[in-house]
Image (cartoon, rainbow, N blue to C red; front, side):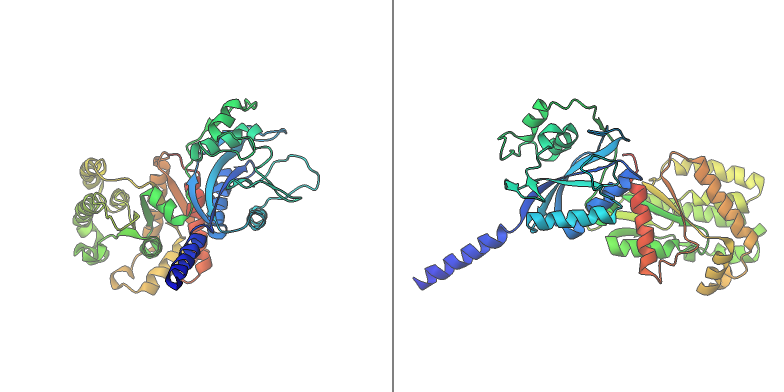
Length: 398
């Protein structure tokens, strides 16, 4: 009898812990500022503070509802949370405030940087001064029901006894809703995984390899590093550029092409995505600076053929630093063959990269000015860099 009682106790205990989390559906919207960035930031903060996000709907652009203002971006999420309903509401209000939401004292609709509403908390029905669930207006709002139907089509309204699809079909709101190409993620790991391949570029001494290593380590990426240290022509080039420019550039091109085709075509089951500290187009940028005109024309023909074959990054990130800081970085890292690099040479490289970026406007080019950032020594500066990536990725088209 005692054994049966103990077994029953542990069964009840397991049942209790398995059922401490609840499914809550939230609606998110924004029509002020960088709407996509604010929504993505809100999702990250909900994942960090409120629970585990299980589902994220498509993102829709909709007209303002109940007042005249700019268009909203709207979506819904499904959240597993252990927070009681009122505590969840408190976290949501804190997130809204953190993201610049200023609530008017008057009960009127207004434009807002972020708006987060609890639609359902499991099938609970709550009526209190601060919280009413299910949300009393959800069945009247097409901009809520359309994304909700993406992630919870068969979830039944506990009062109206109709699922999301039926509520959407019967909704009297006929506002135009347009599905956008935005794609949002629950955290930074998922975001990088969705990007698949990020290339980090920069001038000599900009810190591209260091940043690539940091991101690869923190977010489980396959790391692709340029093998410049193995090139026997590099030290010779810095001593006699005219003599060794062509063999240097040709050897770099061959090595980069082989590495890119090998490394970027082989999927690693244990890594979330790929990050590299260079893009193969840098070969053409440097060659244009170092080669004579006839040499460059020959080089360009071979490069164009190779460039068509290599994998392109989802985000091409360029770390910009001015020449003075680049020279200081080069001096600090102490590679003997780099110590005679001139300011003029570095300025030409910077101009070459910006010419490339302007020449490929359809590429997802992210230029980061890091003159006042030290992402190695300062965790705050590193988070700033990651936030810039987040902001850029939130506005990408897929």
